[in-house]
Amino acid sequence: MPDQPQFDHALAHRQFSAVAFNTAWELIDKSNRTPEEDVAMLCRAAASLWHWGQRNDINNQSRSVGYWQLSRVFALLSDGDMALRCGELSLKYAKDTPPFYQAYAYESLARASAISGDPKSATKYLKLAHRLVDQIEEASSREMLLADLQAINE
Image 1 (cartoon, rainbow, N blue to C red):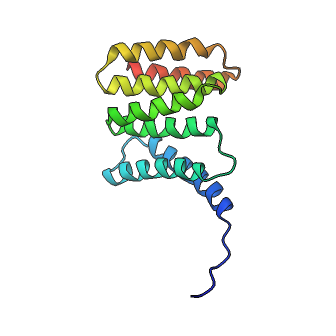
Image 2 (cartoon, one colour):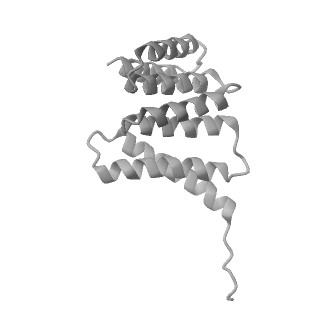
């Protein structure tokens, strides 16, 4: 058996987690995705989370963000069950993170509830997210969150 080439797995996971996350985000932001791009968006978000899970520096904040992104993708694909499941995992890992991440976990649950036809739960999660807004120090982060919360109501 030939010798295996040297390969830095830690570096690869670090690079792939970031590239997959960012390219998934590009597709999330794209308004007219093709069916193939929808699948690519899902694959990239899942790959990002998986590669993060292989890293030595994984923490609950990173897990929360990964599950949040996956929840958003499932919401965009109108899969309320999976959006809710990933939103719940996002919240699980956001418990001891800064308010920004906790609020976005609630945002994902509100969005998942809204597309699942559960306006009562959506309202509950929106209220929980709004309670955290004033605790977010960076103005641009607050504004981004508020815009995303508002978009759920539209």
